[in-house]
Length: 278
Length: 181
Image 1 (cartoon, one colour):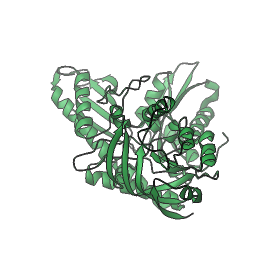
Image 2 (cartoon, each protein chain N blue to C red):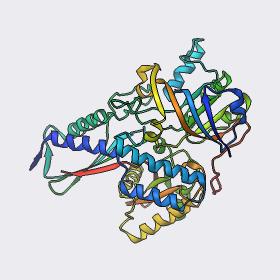
Image 3 (cartoon, each protein chain N blue to C red):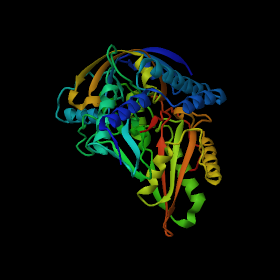
């Protein structure tokens, strides 16, 4: 059994969070530049110019890209032959708290009804998967509330199939309009169960912007959905234009013969993710 | 579509001339408030108490900034989704507030209130928090400190870049999605 020190796990989480909130992933930055060059209206170009300047400024001044530094979402793959001294959850939480504190990041977590802020962004939302091996892989996402609020989950009938999926996803993005800070990235979870579909949709958002699903059939579906969403004409910040979304990412999972679970997890353009393997 | 350099608090004349699509660079004093702060403002109004700032001509920015790093007046400070404040906005406009700054759609009640009380809804670029913070030269928490990021702050802004989304004449800038809803 390989033992990891809790402090090493915490330090990795802390550093990952601070970096994620300040540095926009390169493929997204590149997509902003390409979108700016292809947009035809002044307002769309102006928004994209501001987003490019914002990313440059955040990198140069250590200021967070966006004031909503999110729920701390962690997807963890833990090898069956590795353990963390003092406990994995404790180490992840300590690193998260330190990251939000040292990085001057906003603490957004509160009691759902009393609305009292927990004060240190706890609890982190942790998804844990046990895998073979002795490595610990941690993926972090700073998930903003505005785009999260535009996300939806539904249970389609098997007969509704691909047409039903397509209509639900495109309709959702049409209804969301300017609210989730377009250009968005759209995570889609197809199959699994009522609880698994949204997790798949969120997991899909960790895939780098320029990497399609490895299954060519699913990759074609991603492309078809992206085209349909961009034909909505919502554009950057809802001001009209060709760039409503930068990508659609689908994760699929087998489901019950009676069901077709479907979830859309909307991600704003400030798609802040990082990962580390220990 | 015109470009204006205006001051905050705003005058009736300034608001009346604005049209959806106009670009405005705002300079002066604006106040931050979001979900929990609005709820507290309503409670204060119900109790007949004085609000922490003068609503007359006021511009309310829907924002919960990140903590100010050393040497800066404020942290990252982009707009939050305005729709969550739709419940409260008409009442504030009826009491003299002139404008709000946020991102995303407003409901019919807010659009009606803008027409009835000569108000305006400005959009700022969502997610451009580092860039927008550059236009904020001072920040002071003036109420509800216990709300943390949701406390009410008095901000001094210089040439804060805005777009008129909903004007006082029923105009709206957002694109209508090309899909049967």
